[in-house]
Image (cartoon, rainbow, N blue to C red):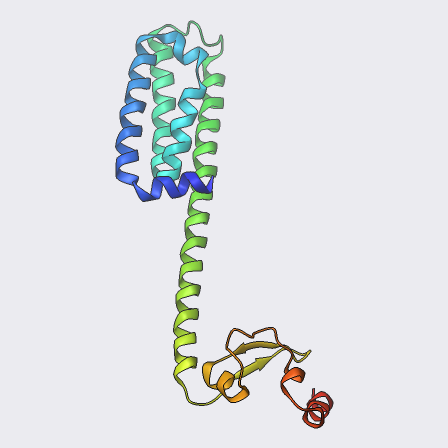
Length: 186
């Protein structure tokens, strides 16, 4: 589903216009040809899903329009073709339409928030890296096993290694005497 969200976000106005035209055509045709409603209810759930990916409010609005169109078509046709109990059918259809819109809209919102948060984290990380790389003091962060988890350029220059050597054991960088002292302190 993430690929669909990405696709809609890239050209949201174009896809919304195309989707609206297709949806209006489906609604018009189904109102004229009443059997299309009773036999092809899935065609009304698909726009709800797609509009919910555009926005939760749009998905809920389309779900409401679906229910109104179903109700109007049923009443104008004297309840023929759908059910002997149209209230139950419409109530069930409303629950399904609004439930689908809410679930897919919520999924889209959650995905968008996660994507925004990932972008902010990456931006913050780049700013932190820039600050740390411009200071003159060497900065090396080790885990409890003595493995280098982070080092800046000044720290790498002091040790005579490259910054990319994250994951290297600090014991490999020291002579035997200093390695034993560090091990005792760790």
